[in-house]
Amino acid sequence: MRKPLVAALFALVIAGAGAAPAVAAPAPAEEAAAPAVQAVTFAGTVSLSNCSGSVIRFPGSEDNDPAMVMSNGHCLESGFPAAGQVIVDRASSRTFGLLNSAGTRIATLRASKIAYATMTDTDVALYQLTTTYAQIKSSYGITALTLNDTHPVAGTAITVASGYWKRLYNCNIDGFVYRMKEGSWTWKDSVRYTSACQTIGGTSGSPVIDQATGRVVAVNNTGNEDGESCTVNNPCEVDASGNVTVRQGINYAQETYQIPACFGLDNKLDLSRSGCTLPKP
Image (tube, rainbow, N blue to C red; front, side, top):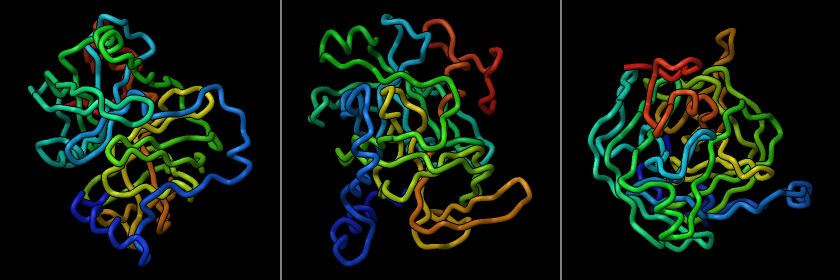
């Protein structure tokens, strides 16, 4: 997980003295020159009290469905879920600051419940809102970001869009991690960024957006800060043979392609649906 926000603020103050960069590292020239179908902006991202997030929809969602906000499981207002814990349909009135393309807060959205959250196999929280996609579009001109429903591809040019810091981090998907361990948690098939995405505390929950399609392929969640192995804020990579690799300064996300299969009509969670592989309570 990213470090607590107080520590993140301290890191910003001392950034010039070797702490994590406070701004996105510039993309290599070959990335900057790559054609993009649409420019990635802050439109549809949200700021939480301690994290980032986004208003998302699934490929099968309809405009009159209740809108959803996605962030990390470790960003829940109730604290980190324990290893093995899965939360479904828990009442919540949490608020989110909705941003426009320029990163300006234009509205406050409110949750009606936590539809799903866990830090087991993945690190995700999905809130159901009191407003529909159509209402958000009509009132604020914001269209929800769509989750891609196929596995991401190595080499893809991506943007990590932090609604909390109002910063865009541009890099590529470097590859995938068979198992990633951090403290008592284990995540499967995680996304590893190339080194240009130097995300910091407060970027947790940011959508990871494919620059060519504008679709969300992952949710940003952690990075190895100190070079330690498998400790909190220092995740380690474990391959299928059990070999452990530590990559200090490298950051990671959790894939989201598996989520749409678990939501049906009216964006209702159904963990028994065909193709749904999310952990169950």
